[in-house]
Amino acid sequence: MKTKKERIFYYDLLRAFAIIAVIICHVDFYFGPLNTPFEVIAQLTFHDIGRIGVPIFLMISGALLLNRDYSNLGDFLKRRFARIIYPFIFWIILITLTNFHFHKPYSYMWNVFIGNPSIMWYFWTLIGIYLAIPIINIFIKEYGETGCKYFLAIWLITIILNTFNMYPLFPYFKLDYFAGFIGYPVLGYYLSTKKFSYSNRKMWIVGLLILLISLGIFVAYTYSNSFPSVEVMYQNILVAGMGIGMYLFIEYLDKENKFSSIKNNAVGKTISSISLCSYGMYFSHVIIIMFMSKINPHSNILFPAMFIATIFLSWLLPYIFSKIPYIKKVSGV
Image (cartoon, rainbow, N blue to C red; front, top):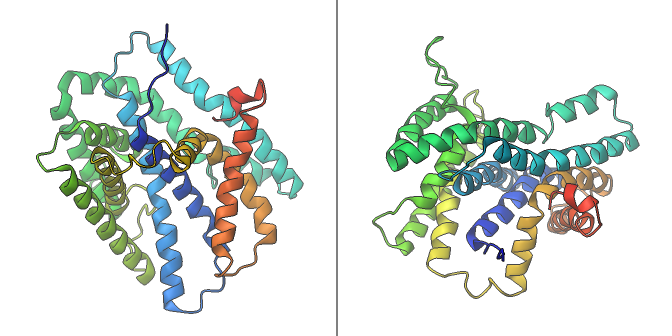
């Protein structure tokens, strides 16, 4: 008899954090008037923390999908695409209907569909990554840790160049197979399997330091407006550093059993539920924010309540859909 696969708690915790981080990026306008440098820095810090979400999602995908035995390429693609395409179709219909309700022009709705500008860009990015996973998987299986280091070293070069808007360095010296988002899944696999020589305690401290230093520099640059004309979203060394730091921090706290007291209580169940609903939440929060923006009090005092309400409603919508027959399969849960 087939047994239920045991969930890995730190993946659930990372995934729950990631979806909350994504929502963070889209609710910072709930802040009230920014009249002082402190308020501006607080808003920037809050927003920049949100940049960690997408790298974490992709790193988890790599940790779960790489160095696996896929006997049938067609079955792999069918299973992966079914899990992301059907919810996408379902939610894009609901998002389009919501845009109709708010009288958005047709050109805007088309741009939402293709992800320019809208959160749907992540869906199209994920399609490209899933197409590449079987190829990267063979490479990782063949060359192991050495292959990971080789790939990540070249990816790191492209990320550094991208940070300063210098990629490609020369017109015909392009490393497109290594550049962009594809490095995050490889990075996630590497961090989840690498046996470091330091203790678990030292590793989560190192992760926390990397996170805080990367975040601090990123906030300082964005506050001073001195950041180069750069791909400031996800393909730069500071966001990669924040992703690495958060991943190590959570992974090694879990390995040191710091979460043992919450795994089976209400807190742990809430984290697991948010993790399970995270893909649906990625879409549903667009709808929730459109409605919530109409009652936005623009108050720093009320901001926490608005933020928590947005997260709760973004979770509630896919959770309810997951309980309805037939709709469950497309709810993103």
